[in-house]
Each structure stands twice: as C-alpha cells, then as structure tokens.
Image 1 (tube, rainbow, N blue to C red):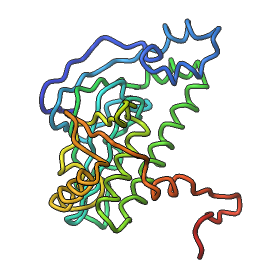
Image 2: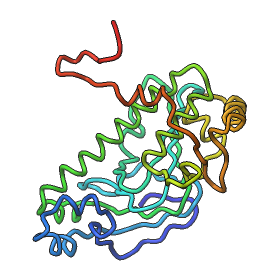
Image 3: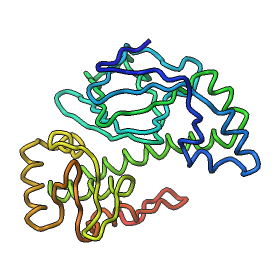
Image 4: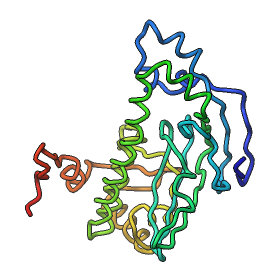
Length: 257
C-alpha cells in the first residue's frame, strides 16, 4: 500500500455515478438507475498537506484514481526548473506511472493536497463493473485528453514575455473550470500561494509578487479570502490562444511558418 503523509481514511465504497454527473450523463436514462448501483469503487480520503506514495500501483490491473472532490497540486522539477498543474474533481490520475523510469534528465515530482480530497480507486474490480457500460470508457479517455489540452494551454501561457500577462491569463484559464461569477467579477476559489503561482507560470516568486501588484494596481486581479477575484474581461492574449484552430491539413491558423 502507498504511504500518505498526514491522515488517510479508507471508506467502504462510492457510487461513482452519483458523485460524477458527467459520467452519469454518458448512460442512457433507462440504464442509469442500475448503473448507479453497479458502478461502485473503494474510496480514500486524503487530508491537506504533502502526499507521497511508494511508487506502487494502487489499482493493479485497473484504470487508476478518479478524483471525486478536492484539489491537488502536482509539481515537477527538472535540473533546477519547475512546472506544475492543478487537478480536481473529475481528473483521472496514475501518479505512479513513469516514476522511476530511466531518463536522461534528473526529475523530481511532488504532490500536495490543497483541499481534503476524495479519490475513487478504479481498480480491477471497478474496471470490470464499469466495462458493463462501454460509454464510460469514452468519458474517461476524454478526461485524460482534456488534461493534456490543459497542459498544452498552460505551456503556451508561460511563453508570454510579461509576467503580469502570464498571471492574468493563467487565472482566467483556471476560472474556466473553477470560477464563480459574482456581480463584482469572477472568483477563482483556489488556495494558491505566490510560490505555487510561480511554478504554474514558470517564474520566480518575487516576479510573481511584482506581477500581482501590477494587476492589483490596474484593478484586474485582487486577493479575495482564499481565492482570487478577476475583474474586467479575459485578456486578449488568452482569447487569441483559445481561438487557434487546427485544420485537417495540420496547418495552425493564426501562425505563419
């Protein structure tokens, strides 16, 4: 069994489709009641703090870990540089995959639980139950592809020269998933420190502090409780990034060779 720092509590099971409405939507209405009862999985609950494992597959022969609720921060370091991603409800994880594999670069990976997190263990038994409903396979594969797209968007964001633009683009990108619309703007209720934002935008913490101060001065971003309040419209640079289309020929519109 993997080792978790902090406390972790095994539960009996979760009716996964009751907690993940997107997966439930894949099932025909007439089949849904039976699918809810059939598609169950064991659950672990991980408290806030660092999260470690012993490079061991928690779901041998199965699918992986499905986040039912909470927030995770994954940090990867290579030769003194760092990158990061945020993961939450609906994300499919296999944190042991690739760990310990031979690489020409020295790599370190760390995980932190930002909010208490419930994780469904989609092990071999759960995979057999889910296999009765092939529609679920497509939804789970889509989750993995969406995670890859989010990483590609973040990669494009960090190549922008100005740190304040990088930060504003990142926060609006996160708002697409986690944002809550309010009369005074869009709240991104994520517990992100300046150090975490620095990893997410590939910058140094002092530069992030300076960039956030500039955004606050322009009344575009301000700290709000444990989150961030965004005012005005999303930055033009992010809208342009999201409007890029890839036609069948593979030529990317908006860019010239």
